[in-house]
Image (cartoon, rainbow, N blue to C red; front, side, top):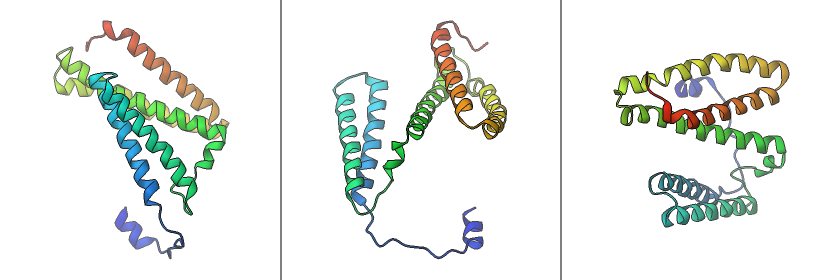
Length: 178
């Protein structure tokens, strides 16, 4: 797609008279890196001093990004879009669902291999029904969103995702591969 885009798209770059904010980019990168380290540390060592140190440092870098981004002559991101409540809630919903999905995608095969002693092929196949179901349901959900707007399908998907996560946590002690 890169080669086809380079050949087919003929636009003159508009350019920008203002300098790029490397400080904002560095602070945003540091914030994501430190928050990732905090989450990883929490998963392996619990709520120890390293978790709290990286969490606080990540939040300080995130706050520094907001200040640097809004104070400069150019913005890395226009954060004013989050003044709209619908965008703010949709973004929060998106990130929470991604965290849940990422956790489930990593946890289900690992649980099958290490706790239930299944082989890698079977552990991978445990994700297949969810992937197939997601591809079929997303087709209908997209059509539903086109007809009615996105509010009801997003709310329904959020509630179903929450119900699935709670069900997994509640039923996990009694689950088996078979």
